Image (cartoon, rainbow, N blue to C red; front, side, top):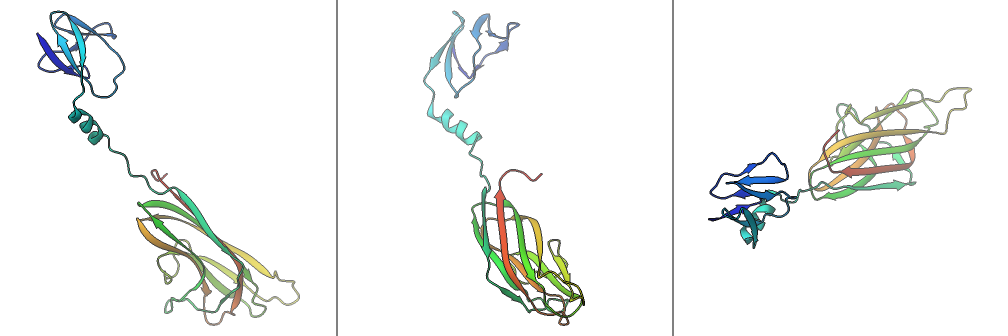
Length: 218
């Protein structure tokens, strides 16, 4: 009798692995084991105990592609922006006001949902007068009014100290991990005065780096 088998599975009959791992038993016959490749159809001759290869039907190939589809990967790219153009911090952001100065921004288009890391830094000039001048800085996505006291917000205080050679500028940085959905987005690095009593000051230069990755989150 001749029966069909697909990748070692005999259709319509019992099929066992013998004591010798290299030999498969079927009704007293022996089939030498080998590496499984693309789905193949064989004819099994019970009287001779041998398997003969048969042409692989197209539907089996299509089924294999359906079971193991190509995975959709997130974007794995990097980018960034830099500027040495001066930006004046004049806007005030507090509980009642949420208008920030845009220090730098990066537009990006993601083909799939991605995990992105953003780092931004600026050199902030000394205001030259006043004491306890407070400034806020924050990384935001698709929003130039992100509110206050978010996880990526950083604060900076500078005063004019009598008899002290105060620094001309101070560096301020922040970083943020963001799960960003597919589509077009804008990541911004924002700054502001904390209150109207704080002196306006100048941001001299800014650098922002964005890296997006596939895979699962650590």
